[in-house]
Image (cartoon, rainbow, N blue to C red; front, side, top):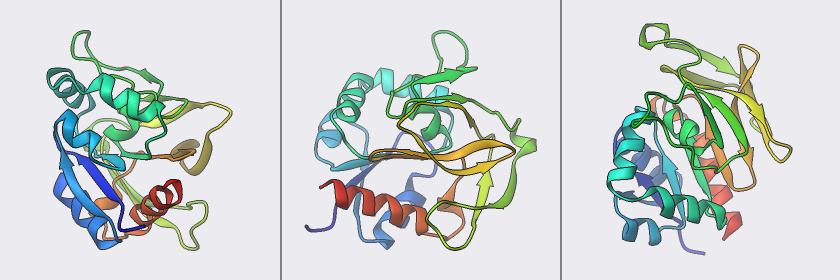
Length: 198
């Protein structure tokens, strides 16, 4: 097939960095803000940012149900940090009612928001990542972790005794930010998942 067309949800966060990383590993990447733009992509990347703000904007733009429908229909997706939170089926500490983070149910998992602490608790470290020869240098910024996984979910990396990278079929999630390190292996993995699915 030709290069997969991968959307990056462009509401908040490291949108440009993810677009550049995807292009560098053979995807045609485009920003997605509207239902029609979502319909036009083969897959979607949900970047980091603030999960409650992103959820508010998804509500305003009437994208929640279209996103859930695409995910339920098998669309490949990748979420980093806030994107991992949104791809969960259940969110602990989802935020204030009316502005709470919305689970899109892309992966059968329970995620805890800000599990590693607040902004001042952000940190970096090397994590072993299943299928990669060398560890990934992971940047955790107000990062979540996974507290429960369903039977179809594969744990790819752990930190502090909790899963921080998981995959269920064609949906991938990390609690860290690979777009900020220059290491393109996780973006390449996602492009490979999209290509295989096609």
